[in-house]
Image 1: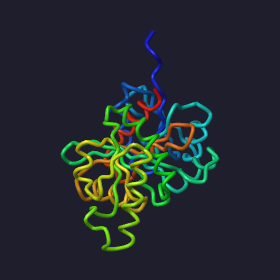
Image 2 (image 1 turned 90 degrees about the vertical axis):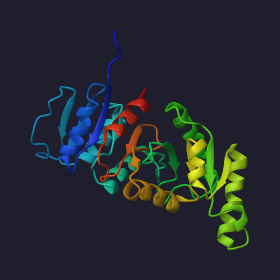
Image 3 (image 1 turned 135 degrees about the vertical axis):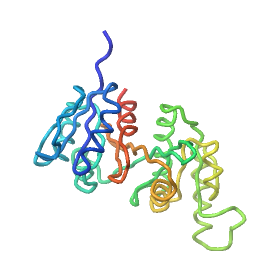
Image 4 (image 1 turned 180 degrees about the horizontal axis):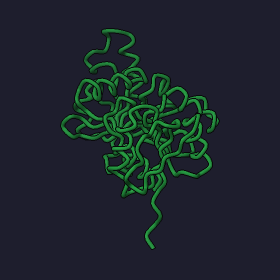
Length: 254
């Protein structure tokens, strides 16, 4: 017998057509459960593998099902970030979430980027832990496990500003302790050979993500949360499509 299809949850708060179109694109690869408020979805999905789960609190309903094992993985979709991630943190008993984003340039180059949240990856131990987890994801997706650590300037910029000096010193330390490469500020060179890129901090990582996806015609395929037990892929409500995020969740659950 063929193995049972993985059960993936995705949230709908707005743009139900966009989410359902994404679900339809991957409906042959998994069972998809769409969590939404009553009445949000007006038309019954054509694919039998797409199911609608209506709830007065769809964020909590999806997280509850994820924790109970009713679904194998969850994708945020268009649910609100604050309430959904808060429910996830409470359910998992953590005070913050660590995410690693799968990005793609306009030229089709895929790479992982972290930290991408403003409260993530601020210390050397946090960055080293993200590198350990990121290498596992890179291998799973066929990306190079080589990791590039970014800093605030080129080595020739040492002495121009104390903050730049501190950034480069920290990047050198992280690279040495984790077996990575300090790529200075040269992200354009780093992605040519590195499957995992480490931003200097969560602010710059978030700016890289937003610049690539919202200004640079690139793509954000979702950001798995890596410091929890269950599989949860964070997404942006501005994403044009969630098919790759759903496939990402399927891959991580196998």
